[in-house]
Image (tube, rainbow, N blue to C red):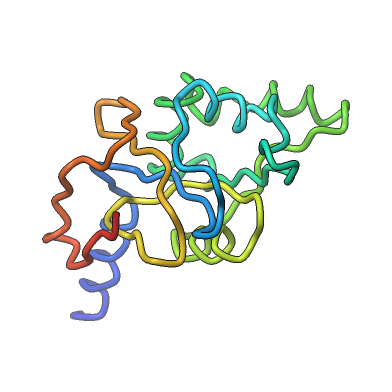
Length: 159
């Protein structure tokens, strides 16, 4: 019974975020992005970084609450309404962002892939990646780290 309780607690923590951190590999030379540029990247209208590396955008599944928060904030639409857009681009050789199944998978992929960009619960940040922007629960995109309340999640953030 205790195992089930711990599992449910971890799923709830995985699902909710007061603040999202938009992340890139630690070695990436960019230091900040705004909402418009993020939108262009995740709609796959901007495909390359300034240094010529291909942008590797990452998402979660359409039912993930982190993706819903990100999509509403940056793409101004819910994930389930984006299907027609991606289907149309597919026939022009443009694929949607790669989908990962967990925040740990997001961290690993971004840390190990030049040009990658994704997002996680800001309380899950660690030194493998670098945050470029922050998205709060009100869907505002911030260029500096807001105060985080990670005590309930027992994980400290690394700005």
